[in-house]
Image (cartoon, rainbow, N blue to C red; front, side):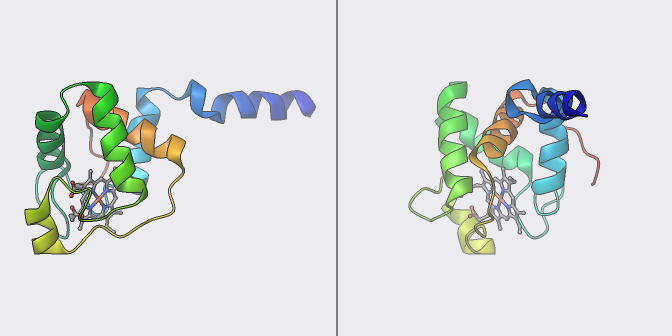
Length: 117
Ligand code: HEC
C-alpha cells in the first residue's frame, strides 16, 4: 500500500509532468473559455499566444508574465486591453502556481491540441 502511494505521488507530482499533461491541464482549466479557433466568451488561445510571443519571445519571460496575469488578472498586467474592453477582465480562478506554469509553458510550445472545440 505504501509503495502504491509512493508511486502515485511520483506520477502526479508536478516535476514529472510532461507535454501531455500540459494538454490535459489546458483543456481541463482553460479551454471552456479559450477555444482554439473561434472566440466566443474569451479570445482564442492562438490570439493570446501570438500577442504574448511578440512581447516576450523568450520562454522564461513568456511563462512568467502570462502566469502572473492568470494567477491575478488585472488590466494593469494585461497585454490585451482591447479584449478586456470587449469581454471584461478574466475572472480570477484559484489555480495553483505550478499548474499555471505548466499550462503557460505548454501554450508557449505551441502544440496546442483540442479535446473540445
Ligand atoms: C471563465 C472564463 C475563462 C477561463 C476559465 C480562463 N480565461 Fe483566460 N481570459 C478570459 C477572458 C474573458 C479574457 C479576456 C479579457 C482579459 O484579457 O482579461 C481572458 C484573457 C486571458 C489572457 C490574456 C491576458 C491579457 O493580457 O489581457 C491570458 C494569457 C489567459 N486568459 C490565459 C488563461 C489561462 C492559461 C487559463 C487557464 C488556466 C484561462 N485563461 C482560463 C476568460 C477565461
